[in-house]
Length: 221
Ligand code: DC
Image (cartoon, rainbow, N blue to C red):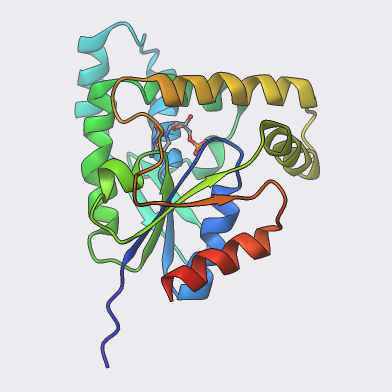
């Protein structure tokens, strides 16, 4: 029997646990996982490297035109290559994080990344996480989930995650950054963060990651 492989769309705000959840769901289904936020971060990284001002639309479009961005989904991680160079580990700094949500509000950037994301999911067998996967990138997939959690819980989880990586972080700053990013991601004109009407809402404030994953996998199966 041939089992059709689908795209599972997981959207939600910053720090809600989308990446860890998506990796675990992909593992359970034997799918690969694609973190689309990494693509916006890659564009932010490139703009920083090239000294692009976000107000200079012509320059910005020229840089995008010449940008070779490759996405290599592997079983438990996603590699991002720019001009053939692996930049995956350079995309998580506070500076790139803040810039990525500004870059994500620019029409030319979203247009550039839409095709890359659709191509990455074309064959199915993908868990794709982001802000607009269920609303814009794969609106026809029947498997859509929208994760949510209280801002306190999201800030605390992100804080513990970064602390665990040995990073020197302050909880109140993380909370402030998340609130600012949410505002930009929800408030932008093109493809704002919102729940697709047919997405299953999963609130993880009071449940464990394992329970979130079980909930998603059981709905799919
Ligand atoms: O998921 P993340 O924190 O790595 O995403 C970084 C930024 O990219 C986020 O602030 C908003 C943007 N983004 C987006 O606009 N659309 C997506 N599908 C994924 C991310």
